[in-house]
Length: 186
Image (cartoon, rainbow, N blue to C red; front, side, top):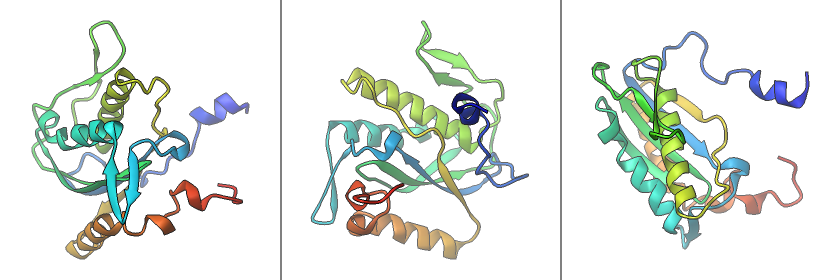
């Protein structure tokens, strides 16, 4: 199998047999391609957004306007990734069934109107990529996949919320911090 084939035949990191359109709470992490720090810097334990970071954060906060049955809970935009909690509610009808693209009309229809976590990720990445490129980041790309965790109880939800709150303070130790890669192969 050549390199191009292996890209399209990656093993899924999703939970087998789990329906990601089910109502519930999901914790996702979305990273920039190559984990390049693009959205700002951590200064004294706080995230200071640049223009690109403000664009991405605004898109994240507006996700509930595009998908009527989701709620955005705690989130944090870091220099090269975003952590967020999304609640998918039970009403899965009447959802937007389009995603932004570079086609002439700017939209394509999605085959399945059922909202799933992957559609949310796809919409967010497509929208932010387009806006960032329009703002001058011509080569901007997100990492192909995203990481997720199905939140199954309140204890787990509270732990993840705390993780999100304290993420900027712990940036110096974060595995996604490029300054921690010196001399290491990732």
